[in-house]
Image 1 (cartoon, rainbow, N blue to C red):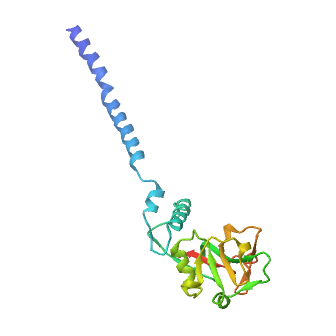
Image 2 (image 1 turned 60 degrees about the vertical axis):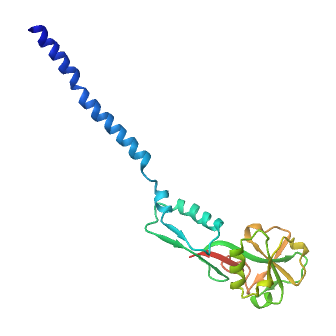
Amino acid sequence: MSVNYKRNKAKHKSRRWIIPAIIIALAIIASIAYLLLKHSPVTRNSAKLTFDSSLTSGEQQAIITAEKNLSDRIQGKIKVETVTTSNNPKLVLEAYVPVTSFNSARQSVSKKDLNELQIYVPDDIDPIIQKAITEELKLKPEKLEAKSIKPEDLTDRQVLLLPVDQLTSNVKMLGFEGSYYLDDTSKGAVFRQAV
């Protein structure tokens, strides 16, 4: 009888560890599954962004990238659209400044002047942006042309609206509507902004 008692006692000791081991294993598996399957804050917040048709795919990507940096501070749904304006920009996506040939006598240009000149934008500009600039400046569509043109080849009757990030020392930036962009970056340009 003492042999059976010892055998049963040995079996009982080995079984004592089975239940805690199963509980620990299940806890580890549940933790790993939670970490793998939960959505990151970026995914949750990015899903809350909606865009209207006024944004180009490049602008949408820029906003998504910026949103990722602010993901912990954004709550709720956000609908994003753009406005093209020449004054009081808020969330600027791009600024287009008027430039001309470095040797041109022209120093500034106004919206009124633009209707009397030939206006160009870079040929890689999205048609959505080109249309928005045309509307903001109240130009006839044929007055604003997307063209690959070097600023040094422009005449006094031509102006190129160039994205600020494409400015070089080979161009002459013009004042616009009485303001110069480099003096006050909230004026002197045509702005694409998110609202």
